Length: 225
Image 1 (tube, rainbow, N blue to C red):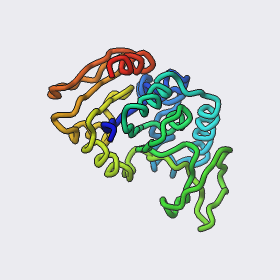
Image 2 (tube, rainbow, N blue to C red; image 1 turned 90 degrees about the vertical axis):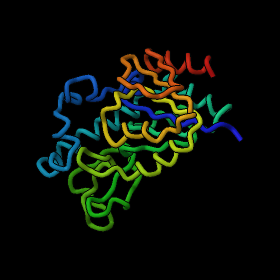
Image 3 (cartoon, rainbow, N blue to C red; image 1 turned 45 degrees about the vertical axis):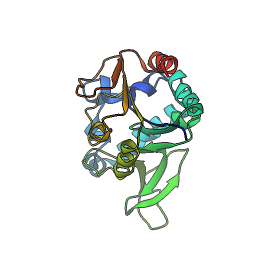
Image 4 (cartoon, rainbow, N blue to C red; image 1 turned 180 degrees about the vertical axis):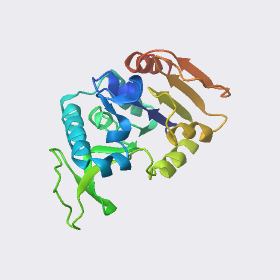
């Protein structure tokens, strides 16, 4: 039995592959207010704008490549039972070689009917206004927007509760409920925090802080482990 490692990743790990997020830009995402393009209210107000925004994001992800942090985490599967819990909507973890990836906030290469959040389809091209699911509902990105429930959070909590090693990479730990996952880490688990700007965390006796970008931080993690 390999030790169980759970890795929570955020925007910082994808940033080094050239994917920008609103994290570092005062609530703007590619020049848009996030609530215009990532909330139910924004969708109701201007669905065409929202669809176009995510169509561009989808093309950006297709053009991006996994970086050394993604491939380094995949390499850790040689020693650990690694479970990735990511806040990112891209597929760079999968393309980097990780075999178990749970997406808390949805996936850019999936879409669903507005009538049924379980009615999910693969998508690699664009979604257009008027594109309908078989149930007659407009298709929308399979993304968890601000104000929507996070259906995968319960599974993520179960993963974290069993972790022997818990690693946080490239997240400010300011988006909930993802930030609450730290509260489910067992006291005896080893905790590693990797970020170029470390979040303010204390109270974990076995915590190691690595104040570096994701690629350099994962490289150091590989040396440590």
